[in-house]
Length: 100
Length: 174
Picture 1 (cartoon, each protein chain N blue to C red):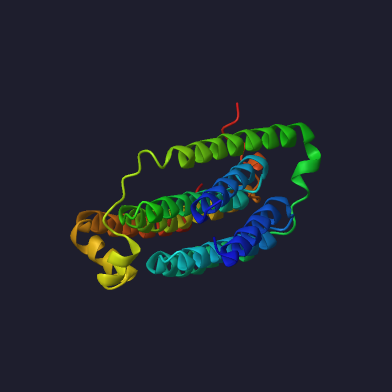
Picture 2 (picture 1 turned 90 degrees about the vertical axis):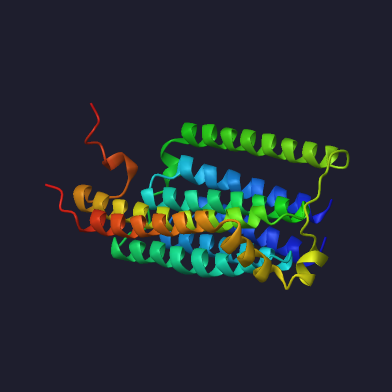
C-alpha cells in the first residue's frame, strides 16, 4: 500500500462521514459543517491525484475551490442568522412555512 | 509510506467520526478544525506548501472562526440526541454511507490496479518543481499567467459574496 492509496482512502472516508453529517444531523449549522468536510475531502483527493501524476492543474483547481468554499460558508451563515431571526431556531424541522 | 502520514490519517478519521456523533455544536466545530489542520499537515508533508498554507489561513482560520462566531452569536446549546428519535433513518443513512464508501474504495483500488498500464505523467515532477524555485513559486506563476482570467473572476465572485452576505444579514423580513 503506497502513500497515494492511503490518502485516497482517507479522502473517501472523510467524504462518507461528511455525507452522513449532512444526511443525519438536523441543525443547519451542522449541515454547513458537513458540506465543508465534503469539500475538504474532495480537495484532498484532487491534490493527491495531481501530486502522483506530476501535474500543477489540480493545485490550481483546489485554490479556486477553497476560495469558493469561503464565499459559500459566508452566505450560508448569513442565511442561517436570518433563519434564526425568523423562526427562533435553526433546526431544519422548524422552518415549515412552505409546507402545505 | 511514512508513519507520520499514517498517524495524521488515523487522527483525522477519528476526529471526523467524533464530529458526526457528538451532541454539542462547538465540539463538532473544534473537531472539524482538527480535521482541517491535519489535512493541512498532510499537504505540507507531501510537498504542497502553497496549498497547505492556504488551507491553514482560509479554512482553519477564516471559515472556522466564522462558524464558531455564529455558534456563539446564536447561543446554541446541546441539541438533544438526533439519532435516538428515529433509529430507522439512522440505519438507512448508515447503509447509504457504507454503500458510497464501498463504491469509492472499489473505484480507487480498481484505478490503482490498472494504473501501471496507462499512466501519463505531467511535466512537474518533484525535481523539476525544485529546480524551478519551489512549489509556491511554480503555483503562483501558473495562477498569474495561465489561469489569470479565472483568478480575476474568482475575486469578483468573492466581492459578490461579501455584498450578498451583508445584504442578507441586514435585511428585515416582514
